[in-house]
Image: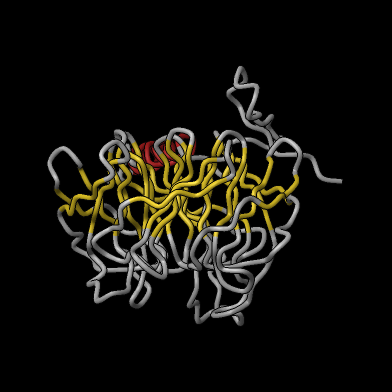
Length: 329
């Protein structure tokens, strides 16, 4: 290869890398008001400008703590009717759905009435922090542990009919993984047993899974968050190179390119975390700063693609579409 051709190839590679980075940019970290009741292995979801942090270890495992993005303040809602940890949570319509963890029971929370309602139980327990996401009006829950699960099971819940359907299993059996939905496809990354790098994509229309580019850092106990066409994976547990056993990594998957990019590390490395997303801001409340039990009340936001805090969409004013991170002194 001539020198001029080598220079051209390197330039093209640099342009491609730059394009990938621009597609899935790094974020900036913002400290926020800590949890009133620190917990790890909790579940979280965002609805109408509020983040709901439910269940977990290290505190009351039926706690329902609510973070108001606009005021940077936490309050308590009605307790979950059961105790649970390592569960799943999503928001759909006017409700927050929570299930799995310690049993296969599932519930929805209605903020307007501050009340929980039980819905149909899933066929599998889906403990061990599975991946859950809403696609075309259904809640998909993949993987997990408990009740004799292999860890590759996939189910979908239809709120309109209050029924679950068992779907095609994953190739990689696992729990404690991260993921989310991008353009109607469900992505699952990492997990255990062991620290896995396996990434798979599920097509609901075809009911099939497809292997995708492996995660650069094999890990479990992570949080996953989707912003645009990008899946961000945060933290994790079981790092032999860290004295606390925690992974500091933030890595992002660009679904349009089937490629990963390594980003600067977490401000407060943690495991046992669950992400909630409002616009381009990822909220990560609680978790643990040591392998095993190391509960923290830390609450931080990862603001994607901006060096400045953004304005929040309040529950009553939805005319603004760009969320902000509440200012801290």
